[in-house]
Amino acid sequence: MSHASNLIATDIDEYLHAQQHKGLLRFITCGSVDDGKSTLIGRLLYESKLLFEDQLAAVVADSKKWGTQGDQIDFALLVDGLAAEREQGITIDVAYRYFSTERRKFIVADTPGHEQYTRNMVTGASTADAAVLMVDARKGILTQTRRHSFLVNLLGIRHVLVAINKMDLVDYAQQTFQRIEQDYRLFAEKLGFESLTFVPLSAFKGDNVIETSARMPWYQGPTLMGWLETVPVDTLRLCQQPMRLPVQWVNRPNLDFRGFAGTLVSGQVAVGERVRVQPSGRESTVARIVTKDADLTLAVAGQAVTLVLADEIDISRGDVISAAAAPAEVADQFECSIVWMDDEPLLPGRAYMMKIGANSVIATVTDIHHQVNVNTLEQMAARRLELNAIGVCKLSLDRAVPFDAYADNRDTGGFILIDRMTHRTAGAGMLHFALRRAHNIHRQALDVDKAGRSAIKGQRPCVVWLTGLSGSGKSTIANLVEGQLLTQGRHSYLLDGDNVRHGLNRDLGFTPEDRVENIRRIAEVARLMVDAGLIVLTAFISPYRAEREMARAMLGEGEFIEVFVDTPLALAEQRDPKGLYAKARRGELKNFTGIDAPYEPPPHPELHIDTTTCTAEQAAQRVIEALRLARVLG
Image (tube, helix red, strand yellow):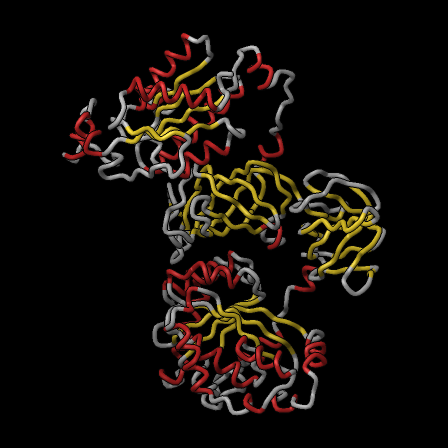
């Protein structure tokens, strides 16, 4: 191995340039808590002697030389430092460690073992070529071992080394190693890894980490480092796949140049090659392959390039340039796997922001096929996904996107779901395939449109969405508003919560999942009525902010008027026209909003009506005035 002090007289830029031509392996360490990940990583960093840690990068940038302070790093201090990071809370992120040997460069994603940090493990595994799964020889296979194994497989990692650590604490017993190996192989049979290697080691004492241990002569396999230096990386496989370039940026500095920049995530592309742009399906040929240094005649997976095409084609960020002979699919409905990472559960029917490549779309889980038990890999029925749950779901998007199955291409088949209210990353997913009906269902072009239907009615269509607690007066106000609209000759329709539950939504209860589906259906009906040119009044508790925002997003600018009918709980309960609050207080009515189910008031409604200061008639008049101000009534 090279030693840091040998680089004192060597220019760092030259050294880094030489490093670029060595193989790069990205791998992840995972497993249960206290299985020895920090100790193992400390041992690898210490033994490699080339510590490309973030804290040393500043020294390099300042001096452009390695100093001798890198020579005397003490292993125990290094491990203590890694452990201290965890005590300081750095476990909420993924720590990437950099080191090198003469044969290969390495980036290891150091992820915490706690179940609540599953999201971090998923982040680290999403770009890894291989996984080192830690097992404490004293404890054997644990729940988190199985969870991480399932996730590693789900995220497409094909090569796994099971590091059975702390062998020094079990007297290097061969029987212990063989028992754990047998247990794990039995579990992993259903996962189907391409290669599975078992190494008995002691990260603390160095047994079988870098060099073969004399204390375990019964073991004849590779050391951990030997495996890391020889395990295959995905570069060759990616180069052999069909070409995909997700467009990150359209570069047009002048009228004579128009290029489409991005990183080639798979395949190869050459000047003169025929390509297809998706989702549009338009084709052209590659005229130039531009890089910051010079033009290329051929580019391969992993290179950042700008493609110049021979024809003027409308291409935007998020489009995918594919090999014309083997293009990506395009669809808007999928089967997928989802790893849920948010404290708030995933509810079918709720809309989330989905990022796939450079595309941002609105996504809804329409159905959960099943949830996976990570201990047994059993498929279980589920109506929602809680924190750290893994499920197979049907996914529907608001528009079609180009994609590949995640098993074929991580970059064009992987996605994240983002909570639209909090902007937190709520889940990570892998597309399996497009649902057949996504290919068979197409929008029919109609000659009569919303503008024409509205014009003959002399009004602008919209939805007036009244929300508030039960007993706040929503239905009374909405009924009065529709009466006034009728006297003015306006065309309207009132969708009332109780009435709709007698028909369209009679199959729904009041669980959070049913409430979400209730509002989703109402929003779809309201959207169709707006398309018909009507003024639509809705009177629903609609307790969740996310579903009201989903309804707003379905409509055009200015077509959604949210009215918050604000009544204190005590007053609503005092009115209690249907006796519902009394039943809820007696425990006879579950999931009742305001009692044992939440209500999320609108932060910025178009109209805020305080029913403690005005009558229902006055409130209705305020709604009519709001419609005039919005030019709905002309």
